[in-house]
Image 1: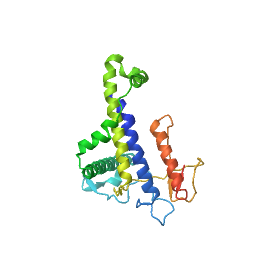
Image 2: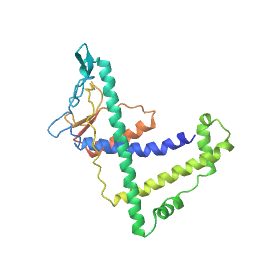
Image 3: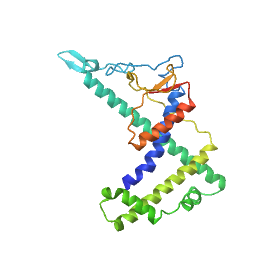
Image 4: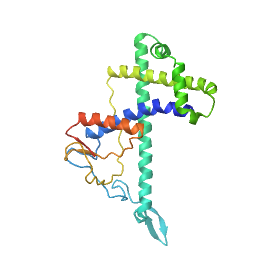
Length: 249
């Protein structure tokens, strides 16, 4: 039960910042594959090995080497997808670790400035300013998720309250750290992996932005998904910020 209560606050905060940050990196032209002198990104044919990957021998059969390029197209596609997933997971963890380190240091610096401990600062700015959820709020959460909870309200209420309070505290601390970030110079230089690229034929799909934009973003969305809707809002902000550099299909 804690999982579904935690998703809304944790994923929303992280995904919003991640989407905003990564797309801003791309649009700003900091991804090496989107050079300033190129109108479109480097591409590889679907399933073809990346140009940066060597073609090692996997072994031999009767003295004849078998290389990655000898494998079937479907197998090479699976290998590329596995490499893609691994690099993205690594970048995901780096991003989370960087954000946590920034937050921890900002809190420590502010506590030092006040001559207090981090725990005292957190109590003053987070715990003391986080209101307990009301009985009506707890009941509303239960009613919306009763089919998944499958236990009586009396048993679920303390767990729901505890999780709601934890989520509210997390959100309050995040908001407070954001105010500290406003007075700090935070620059992200996490290396973006050179992932396999594919040609996407957008056909006559509707688009926003100039046809010769430096970056073309093809969006696949399910608007019944709340995170897709959130991504759409962030993309709209990027279109406004980079009207001449981004085309969204």
